[in-house]
Image 1: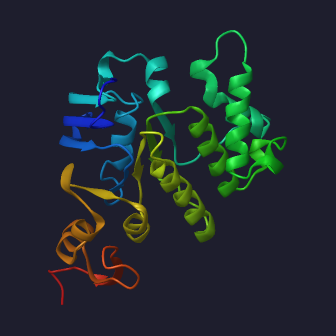
Image 2 (image 1 turned 30 degrees about the vertical axis):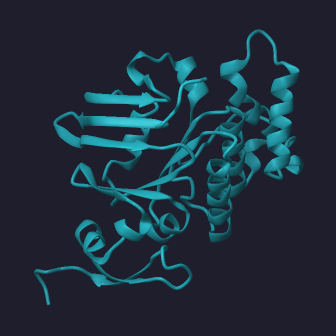
Length: 270
C-alpha cells in the first residue's frame, strides 16, 4: 500500500519579515486533500506573501512547510513544480506567444529533450475541458483579462499538481468571469480521483463564503481564525478584522453566510 496522505500542506510556525517589518508571524495550519481553502484579510495583511512563501518565490525566515509530506526546504524547484502550481494575480508579457504554447509550458517539469505525445494529449484534454479550443492559435497578449486567466489556469492544470496556489485569481475580472474561474477551481478539488487542494488568496468575502470549504483570516500578521465559512465569517470577526459593521444573512444556504456591509466600525466617532 502507498503512503497515506493525510494533509496536502502542513505549515508550522511560519514567519517572514521584510527588512524590520514583520509580515507573517508564527502561522500554523494544514490543508487536507480535496479542499478549497480561501485566505482572507485586509490589504497588506500578508495573503500574497504567504502564497509566495509556499512556492519558494520568497524564502521565509523561520518555521517549516511540508507539501505532500516533503519538507519544502529540502525540495528542488523541479520536484516542487511537480507538486505545486502557482497562479499569480495577473500575467503580462510582451512576447507574441500562442495560447497553446503558454499552456504547454505547464508540462515543463516533465519534459526532457522533446515534447512527448502524452504531454500533448494532456494539454489537449485540458484545452477541451476549459473550452479553449477557439483560443489556441490566438496570441496570449491579445486576450481579455478573463480569457488570460483561464489560460493560466489551464497551464496550472496541465502541470498536474497536488497543491494549487492562487493569488487573487479574480482580481480585475467582471462578475461573470469571477464565477467561471472560481467554479473551475472548485471543480478541480472536487475530483476525488485526484487528491489535490487549492489555497486561494481572495478579497471578496462573499465569494470566499460561497466557494471555500475553509477560510483562513489573517490579521495583525498571524492567523486570526481558520474554520468553515459558517463559523469564520461572523459579525465579531469581520468587525475586528475589517473594521466594518455588517449584517450576516443566509439567503440560499444555512451554512453559507452572505455579508452585507452597513457602515465603518469607528468607535472613536458617533
